[in-house]
Image (tube, rainbow, N blue to C red; front, side, top):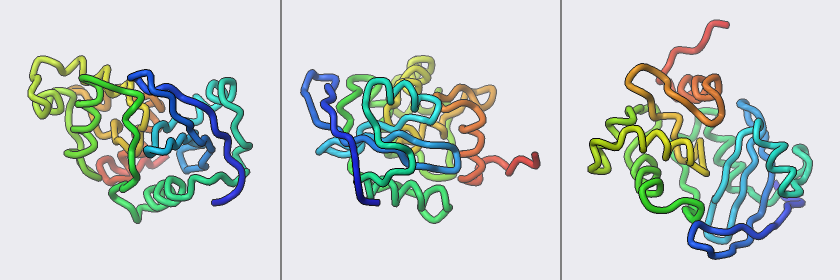
Length: 183
């Protein structure tokens, strides 16, 4: 993918300004808006958020190529079932503290085709009483799919997901965690 991209300033959680290149990547779960800073992938937003992002950031049209080749290539491989681990540099600047600890632990310890509960992830970070806060951290994940919050379930089932439960179900089907839906 080469061509146009839109670069805008973005502010990290610590107040540091960074330039972010934005683009749209088409996937089987719909368009993903992706943002890459000089430090790495900083943002992935689902298609439902596309118009909200477009209102704040002038993005190229979805069919225009953008200079986000590693992100596009790895997402394409993931959705084709040939990539099980992303090796993109990540810019964690939009999250800090507890949320960052949770997301980094998730990214490091929950692999393709694996699932954990909010409680199990709370235990992994050494805070067994923080299962609800882990759920809030999943909702604040700025890099879903690549930082796989879809792999975190409630004790009762799927739990929530920023991209919608149908998207979560499809991602878990892709990874072989759930059987493919018949309809």
